[in-house]
Length: 64
Image (cartoon, rainbow, N blue to C red; front, side, top):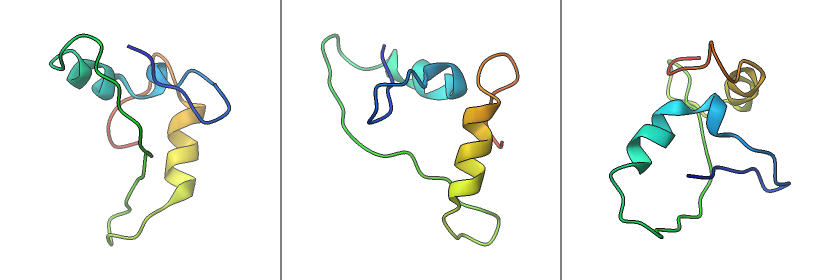
């Protein structure tokens, strides 16, 4: 599974739950979309998405 930014940066380590969910899709499935993050009030927050990308790897996981 490959998860890349529009500039080609690998994002899968920052979003392991997407990788896990993708295992249920048929082989050769291609998806195109955008990642968004909501805060506790229901507003979209680019800052939380950026924080998640900076934590990618070992500590990355839902909620951050």
